[in-house]
Length: 321
DNA sequence: AGGATTTGACCGAC
DNA sequence: GTCGGTCAAATCCT
Image (tube, rainbow, N blue to C red; front, side, top):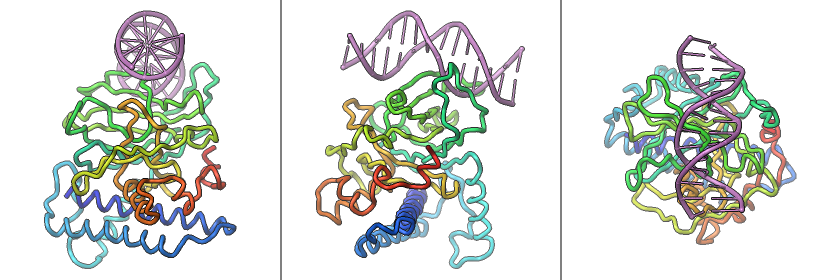
């Protein structure tokens, strides 16, 4: 079941990514159209995701206790009104100021982080910038602790974080860790995250993201250095390379300007720097590999297809700045 | 030495 | 008044 949901998520994100990039071309008519092969293979990948999901749903429809099972009619053939209603309600639930999504994780640490709308620019110059709790859009994901190694480590998501606080939370067995982007000072990156173990499932982290990463928007921001040591392991479980910042994935429900950014960290040297990005990002990178026979996830190769936000003005980005 | 983490204190939101 | 988020000094680590 988890696998099926994972595939659905991946399919959605690939589709949204494709849509986003197509819109990019529509709104920037000076750009060359994307290669037909690229579009074709993107569609194939999306289709594969949903086909895989359906296969798993059919072969093993038992819902996991960790996930809210969709109504049984989802598994039935056809599209009746109740299915549409269920889908709509799910979309509505995710379109508020705060969205939450559970990300199936298998094996190694994976994370599906969100590209967040960040509100008005943080007043870092003030002594204690505070804002109302609902001012900043939050996105919450749940990430399984690594099954191997130190399960106490906070989940990796491709960014580098610096811990700036920890606090016992009322009613929670485990303290909440407060992290901010390592590049906060250098690039005024306002991104923060909170990591907390679930009371009922200590092997799952609830990660709340606040603010959007702007460190990769700077022309002097750290460049992407895709790790070469990471390799795919068992099916559906990959140790993932850091996707470049322009490989953005919107999680549904947040509208066009609210989604997820999977961005990469600078070529990290410490263990915490090693990125473990979401499955879909890996697949897109894999697509790039396949298309260009580069043998590695080359940023430059994909930039040929999807220009970096740094290179091309993006109205969504400008809204965030 | 410099960056990261820890931890008690501070302070705003509720 | 309580709680959660942040600050910042002390400490640890590389």
